[in-house]
Every structure is written in structure tokens, then in C-alpha cells.
View 1 (cartoon, rainbow, N blue to C red):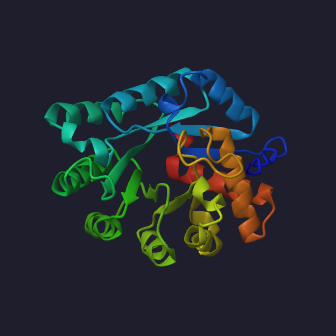
View 2 (view 1 turned 30 degrees about the vertical axis):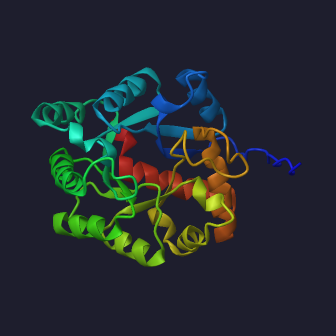
View 3 (view 1 turned 90 degrees about the horizontal axis):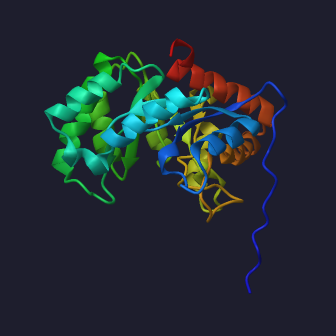
Length: 274
């Protein structure tokens, strides 16, 4: 029999400090554990605010509903590249209305996914550009999804710059060379639990080199669960494992990393105005 994985205790912050989970999908986290319980567990662990992310019209509407229901929760709206074939004029008009709801802090996740390609590349490209244009009229920061599409993502973002409301490369999956080009756009880089994996040398290098003032943290829950909980469903409180790993890689106290990334999150998502 293989060895059982040892579960380290969740890292804890002193009272008055918190870490933001800048990207999760509360509507997709286990139906066996209701959202209220998930949010309460996160807050008890020092994780707040929590941003729940839209990937299609229904989940964008749900994100807004949850943000209205739970004080620590904020929402994004947008259509994920997997789902862009559903987009039509009616949905674009609805998205424009949703952007104006209280507690909507960003537009996304949008982008390109050349791994699964549930939608053809030309359709992904068309609607990536059009959704950027919509977000800029609001104006809301962009939450970008990028899988194996670095060159096209950068080409389009450079064509569309500048971005007065900024943006973030969600669930960053590139190397330091790519990270530098993202930083040149004025964007933030969001680090998921992947950084805790033993085979994550590229993202660990990025974490060690990135200016701290451009770093945010996320779970992408229920996906990408960090060590030592890898293999189980991810929850917002597990962002604390990611925070601890990054603090260790940077040789910083967890408290300092928490302060900096929380300040970054407030600067990008402007929670106080929602």
C-alpha cells in the first residue's frame, strides 16, 4: 500500500489579517456543502473577500445572486472560451446589464483555450476581442483565461491596450518570459494552488521573480487543489496553503505576503466602490 498523504494544518493569520481568494466558482463547489457553509469556513480561515466567477450567462447571474446574498462575496460576469458559441446579441445585451450590478468587480473569465477547444479558434478570437471591448466600456478589470494560447492572448491585449481598469492573468500557467510580457501590459498575475506541486518549477520561478505588488492569489475552486489537499475538492480556505508556499519561496513571513496581496486585490478589484 502507498503512503497516506499527510495533511498539514491550514496556515493561520493573526486576527485582523486576511487573504483574498480572487477567483473561485462557488456555484460549482459541492452541492453536498452549501455555499453559506463554504463562505463561513473561508472567513473563519481568514479568507475574505471571495470573488466568484462567471463562465456563461447562467453562472454570471448566479455569481451576482451569491454576491447579494453573502457579504464577503463579490462577482464577475463573462463568457469563458469554452462557452462562446452561445453568444449572440441578446446575451451581449444581458451581459452589459449585469456588469452594472452592485458587487460586480471584474469582467471575465474570458480568453482563449487551445487545449480543449470546445469552441473553434476563430469563434474564440472573435468573442475574446468583443468581450474586451464590452469590459472597457464599463470600465471593469479583465480576468483572462489562457491555456496554450500565449501568443494570441498577448497579441490581442497589446492591440487593445491601454486598459484603464487593468486586468489579471488568472491561474497563471506560463514561464517568466511570458510573465514579463503580461506585466508590461500593466496586468496582475494570479497564482493558483499549482505552485505547491513538486513539478511546478516554472511557476515557482515566476513567483520568486515577480514584483510583489503585481501578485494576487486564487484557488479556482473546486479545481486545482493545492498540496497537501491535492486530489480532493478545492475550497476557498485552501488559498492559505498557496499563500504559505509563496511566502516560503520568497523568504517572507506569511503575514507580510497576506498584507501585500490583499492590498493588490483591493487596488485591482476596487471592492470599496461596490
